Length: 223
Image (tube, rainbow, N blue to C red; front, top):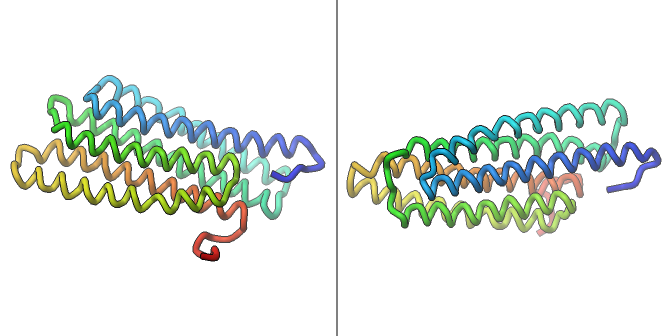
């Protein structure tokens, strides 16, 4: 981040970055806790995870208000302006990641009384590990404003997509073999789709980081 003559300007930008990092950490924990609740079939933990969504929504609103105030007061240009506009984009992606965590937790509530096969839960757990690693990588890339790390995040998205397709086929097989499997397989399939979307939002954030640093889209980068 460029040093400015007015130190309070730098403080404003650092505060904005810090709030994004805080929101990212909370969104990551929501997804992680929702998966734990799903694997353990812990309905109480699932309800607790759903309740955490309101705190992330408040952070999203605070970030929007902070960004608008900085633009009004400082009239930023070049990378500063890109950084502030990007904070608005990233907070939207993180708010949606938190919503996905909430939706996974709701799948656990919907499954109450049903026990899916362990191998299916292991598949969801493995996919969650990959998606959460992708999210952590992109949050680290944002803190460091590291465009190379952001590019690496985008390249990892194919792995999440491939895992989702594999799980989709597996769930479909279970549903075709026995109609009694349809209810829990459908809920697990929703959870897998939510994890695939977490990877998509991590990719969006990575593309935004690249834009902050270069002023260009990833599609325009040299290969």
